[in-house]
Image (cartoon, rainbow, N blue to C red):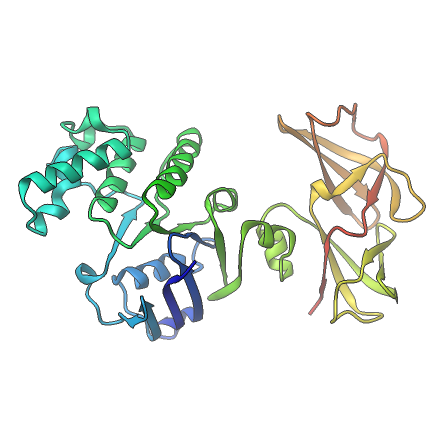
Length: 357
C-alpha cells in the first residue's frame, strides 16, 4: 500500500495557546484512518488544516509528494463531511448532490449519470426529489456523504459526522460508512472521540493527547499494546494496579501490589528492581475461579453489573483497590452475588507494565 498524504512537523498556535505540536503522520492510499481524541484535543483543528480551512503555524502538508500548504480549498482533491451535514435547505437531494458537479461545469448528462450512480451507492434512489427537512438524520448524513463522493475526491474528511445521531442510528451509519469506503476505494480520514467507533471502523488510529500523537497503530495494537498508561486507560476499559518491582528473574518480573505479588512475563528493557510501576490489564484478561500456585488471589465481590452480552464483576481488594473482571455470558454461566468470595488468576502473558513518573 502506497502513502497518499503526509504530515511533517505540523504545529498550530493561537497567540500563546498551543493546539497542535510537531504532528508527524503518513496515511496510506485507500485507508480508513481515524484521529481519536477527547474534546479539546485538537483533532478538528487537524482535519481543518488537512482540508485547507486552517493554515498550520509551521510544518508541511504533502499530498502525492507535493507540498500543498498554500493550495486553496477548491484545488485540493479532498471533500469534507461535517457533523451538521451543511446541506443546502433550498435544494432537493438530487441538486444537493449534484451542486459540486455543476460548479465544475460538467455537461448535464454526465451530472445525471454521476448523481444517479451515487444515489444508488448510498441507497437514496427513491428520495432524490425530497428536501433536506423531509429526511431523517441518517438520510441527511447519506446525502452529505453522497455529495462528498460524487466528485471522486482522493480523500474524504469526516469531522465527527455521526455525533448528532442517536445510538441505534449511529451503529447503522458506522456499518454504512465502512461498507461505502470499501466500495469506492477512497481514503477516509475520520474524526471521533468515541473509542468503540474508532475500533470498529478503522484500519489504523492515531490518538491525540496533549497536542501530540500518543500512539499510531491498528486497533488491536492500541488495545493490547498501549505505549503509555494514558492510552491504556483512554482506549477501552483497563485496570491500573500500582506496585513496585519486587524482583526480576530471567523471563519473569514479580511486582508487589495491594492485590498481592503478581508475576508478569518480562518483555521490557526499561524495568529495574524497586521501580514504582503500574500494571495495566483489561477486564476480559482476568480469569475467574482458576486457582493456581502463582498469580491466583481470593477476594470478595463488591458489585455485579449485568450488561447483556457481558457481565462486569467488581472485586474488592485492600487499600480500596477495585478490580473489574468481565465475563462473556454466552461462554460462562456463573451465579454471582455481592459479597461472594471468588478466586481470580492473572495469566503472566497478559497485561502491560508502565514505569511511573
